[in-house]
Length: 345
Image (cartoon, rainbow, N blue to C red; front, side, top):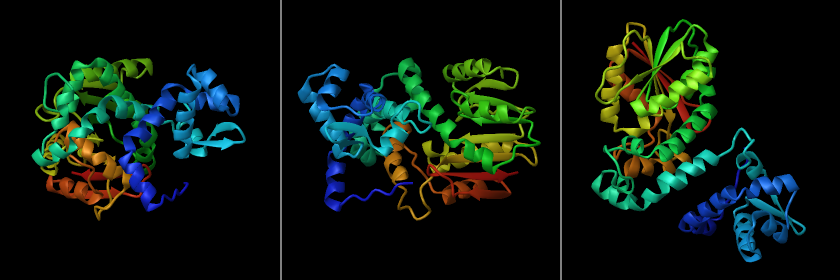
């Protein structure tokens, strides 16, 4: 891990000019600049302009901006990728952030100008930028298949990067049938079914979403063990015959009160000895960080639901106990600002 020190004045300037910094990065990705730089071992201004098919002046501006952000470096007269660009901005890197940049550009950023009003009114005012039915982002996306694909591409990518931590910390041996509440494109269900050949997993989500999960399960030759169950997590019952619930990247969406209600529904659906695993982004218990928690939380109130945020592990444990689970185990020293809290019935 590399520590980057930013002077106070520079940090404030970066905050003020944040949208510009984002667009520099997004444009570099859109134009395949980082791929071209890496393939060539570095590009001069004129070479970059020719490679990108743009005039020299716009090329200078783009290269200057990305160098000022330490995303590119200059060696002689050639611009090369920094270490962080090689790790995060090249498509073949396991840490590639392209899907995150896409969802930020196409779904989140257009709404974030409404954050102040969402804070005043305590409702997701930013949803006005997206037409369609429903009062949450997830419902509205069903009317926009292209944006829905962008959303689930990012969620699937995030799950694939972070889900290994669950498998490293919790043993699913002996579990027969899990339900993945809000399981989206089925990424978690497929990984679990691959790891545990005797396990069945049901993806519970909106009907238009679970079609993606069904297709991906069939492609992985897992259709016999990865099932889909259409429904609304807020109003519809969970499928029967389960002995475990996955509540992954759901807790951030809702208020603590609504989360407790949802976890109580999970508790009621489980037999004695059943488990509910809550895995999500978390803040620290002091409410002062991490940076990811601080930057993500406004999205939930402005756009996603109008009531959620990135909670602390203590908040999650409190909700699990309030839902009736007799015991809770915390795994809160995980990478990617994640924590796993397991409730036992």
